Image 1 (spheres, helix red, strand yellow):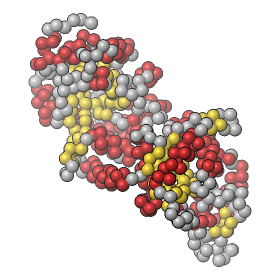
Image 2 (image 1 turned 135 degrees about the vertical axis):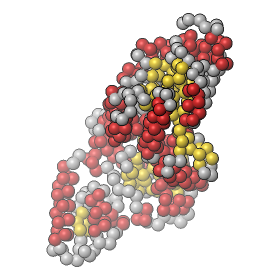
Image 3 (image 1 turned 180 degrees about the vertical axis):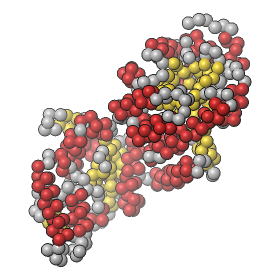
Image 4 (image 1 turned 30 degrees about the horizontal axis):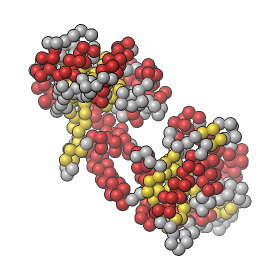
Length: 495
């Protein structure tokens, strides 16, 4: 088929009301994919049946497009930087990506049509205040654009001036009004070359994580990105080759000084970096979509270790931490339910943060209920460190609540923390949940928790996280109350 050469300038950012165009194959496909109308394929033989079939399809799409609401015609093209005309002397090309806080949740709550209208309004406002910018949509929640500027400082100033304009209230024809918070990531083409869009995305992620409004991609970001990419590659290999390990931290029952539950914690000893902090590699896995593979490895290993413990007459329940991303993942939920169908009820538990259901509450709550119905113990981890909500406590099918160590660490030195801890214990008990105190490191704190009616304690006073072999030796001791914690019990006062 002839006439298939792309004309990049034609293929991008056509006015919607433009007349019919005859283009090459690649350009025509690009145009159809980006929602353009009046697109036709040109070929040397106008009677070619493939050309006629393509043009017939385009006619149908045109008719369909004419009845679609305006929201469906939000800009959908990606930036084609090569199509930019040469910038003026002394100027460079920059790419910026606008990230709207909570836009994914807004889309789910109000629907894609309202979200598209908002993106349309955002792009129209951007065109009005930065007419020399080229706009292209990224994904479903971000908007990207490119513009010329005389250096980094001028580009940053332009975005700092633009941001409050873009954040000004949006009032739709439907009568709905929205106040949007935004962050912008910026990168220069001279510094980043063909990866300028990826660099802008990295700058946006940095801006959002650091709670700043405008971030420019710099050399240090490049080094950090390269290090993260290398670490990600090594982490994927570590999962595939099972070069990770689990350690276990016991939970002491304060009723009889026995351990019946342990928490599984993943560890990674890198060949050259040594021990990598879980905060670092787990966060990296969450940011890159590798958290599913990592979680499956943890679950499979914990189930195998639980079987070894049971064979040694230590029938412990093992709790694994579940990322908020996985709680609402239906594929993972189906996989997990299949895995636990082969183990005794209560042998495995899940620890989730109290904010794990915020993004997709219906799916998350449905999956958690399925987990609980299948015999998994559900524990709310780090309670008090996030957006504690009685509404979530009431809805979650949880069996256990873990009070964050932030409150436990100052239990014997603060006036307010004991009141908060005691009221939380009473609340959890009223809702039918057991209570575990995290971060217990001294005997007086343990004694005070016992007086308050706390059910379990976890922390360095009881045990550091230990390998499976050490855990078996720990369990062989029988009485797991540390000797340093015995004296305060002599002065126990009933609650």
